[in-house]
Image 1 (cartoon, rainbow, N blue to C red):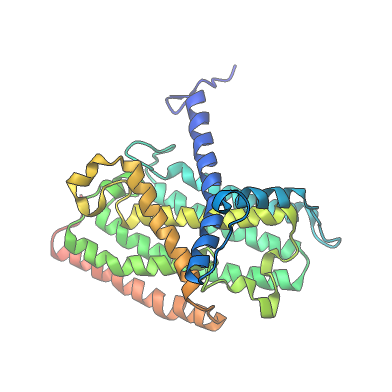
Image 2: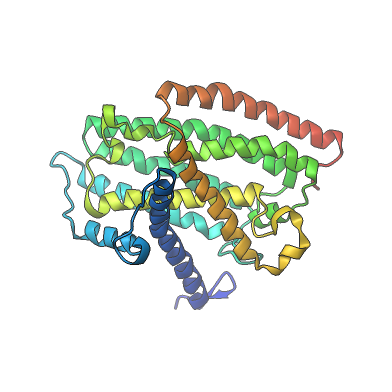
Length: 336
């Protein structure tokens, strides 16, 4: 008989409850992130946003979900049906499983593994497969061009993101996300990491295909990009996966640069607030950055996007890795 009552030293029921809580919280956050985006963009453009479905339009995400569920799923006759359906499921699933290693508070994490940052980076990198599968399986030149655009920009900016993560690891000496948050970082180390925070914020915009880097959806050239042939819940899974990935990248930024659940600036008086509250507030701050960027900047040309990634970010992050490593050695501040 299989031993099902004990997984990693914890009761199976507790594990399932924890997983259900994470999935439910992420799905609820994704639903109301779409509402928040429409409200924030409306405020920035001096209009109302959702306001008729429920009080203050709060039921609009539910109405949108019901609408998409009630629509017919159309699969092009020349498409590869299995890959066509699998692609959005894969993209959405990857955005959920990455949360297994995100520490919401001290010891409040599903899997506190020693290589958590590598796990996160691997999961975020695999998202490109879902996009390529969608573009190829649709058997449409527009979808395929959108998939090629998206995959090339994601791969390009993952190089810079990897080097940014290397600088954080040099300062913390651990691949464990909890230890990265708890690592002591003097003020001069935080100042050195600040340029890497800016590079990381821009890179996650490109990684999530968000404005001003939403090139996979060039309306004047390739219409809806890699998801142009999708409808109903298959389209909704792409949509949900994109927003879930944005929330995940926001949480990664909080873990790597903003101290996770710790109070801001190390102010002890603020420690009376529960740690998970600080984590959520900081994540909301980065999520707002996504919306702010969309409302502020026009879309880049594709050559500008590639130039920024390969000719600016890549050389700068390579040099900055050397600067950070050299400074840590010079001041005898390498973590033990």
